Length: 296
Length: 256
Image (tube, rainbow over all chains, first blue to last red; front, side, top):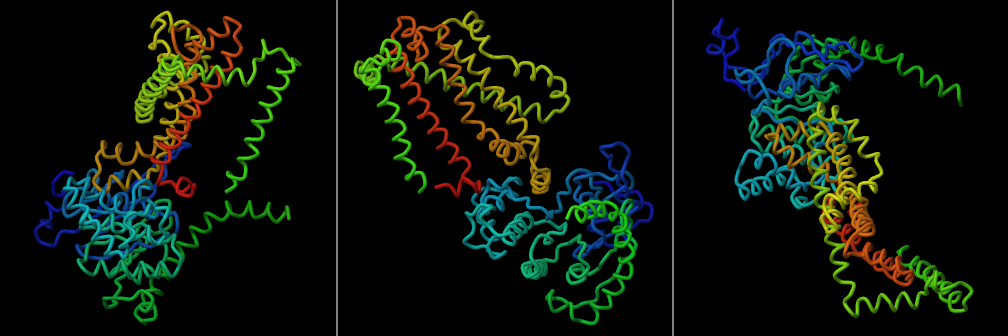
């Protein structure tokens, strides 16, 4: 990661005049090579900025380049065009200020819950005793005291997500990138996890970029909701402020009129994109169901 | 347990075979010169252990087996790792590896005897050629199939390339390597015994070959019995190692 100031900031003096963004995308395009030849444009000309301490959710149809945006912010992939910066520094390689909560199970199956959580501090060369004490604290904080020596397969899906949350937060990131982290959980567990996330977030207000296809989840959690168009070439097509008071309870906040207003506004934009994404996927779905009915 | 209930039947099969063998040779329905006798074989094995004759042969075979396994496995892991991490290298060497693996390795044994002499070294070299490919292919596969998300997550936590190897790549490949451990240890033993059989001064293979040379069928069967018992012991040790290293796996934890 180099410590240079983005050119547009030098020109406008913006870096000195306003608070610097935790995450800033400036005209970012990302293309992927397709195995069969040619390229696929995942996101096209995306510009966005997330202020320090802000909770921003990105909603969009399934398969629409949402994860690509997170991978760009994390520094796992580089933009084909445009620039990504974090706290004024260009993201070039892994973004050391960010932690990433993946959609998939990414705990190391051969390590216990404690060893998984302690991994981050150890990799950052903290002394072992100190790192382990900290890991125990974090496991307790996500409600898993007494489960330190369980292996991931001995924990439920919700517990594994809690371990993953502790694993990400223990390194003290300034930014938390979350990729549909709760989508694999059942509805009740999911609501509990969302409330826990808000409770933990409330303590020190990290910057959060949260990606989901679930509109209700996005509004219940975030300060601002960005709407991503259907891929290929996904763009940001809308931004909506969520004026709901904090602390929030995700199950109760849904009943407030302000929630409903934002919901209607975002859904108005999202609807067309979802239908577009669906229409693009329908021919592929149609064929197998046709053969199935023909056989029976 | 099902295992405990099966045991009487399994022992019954063994006893029945031994009884038929003993009775038919006792009554001279078949010639004991060609088939020997369970009682004679047991007597010979007892004599070998009582006089201490067998120990130096057992020790030689065990040494060759362990050395062949360790060297073969170390080379297999190192090369498997290296090739999996550099696709260009694996693409260039791919046809040669396939050819080398397709070659029946037994034809190498006389050459190794020529190169490395009649001692331990030629057997180890022969065993290594058998073990190497099993471990190599499994390591290669294991490294290639590591979940990209596990790597990315560990990178985000602050891992450099060396950390990735230690915390993600090696443990992930270990599952594949261990799954081939029974086969590769067995092949190390095959390498040792076949090597001794073809030319040596000591070892279980040598004992069997010597007995054959003097039409001593009792000696051949006694050698086979000791070899079988030795294999069972090694297999048991491997199983214990496997259980210890794969304690985190769901199947291993569920095992009694």
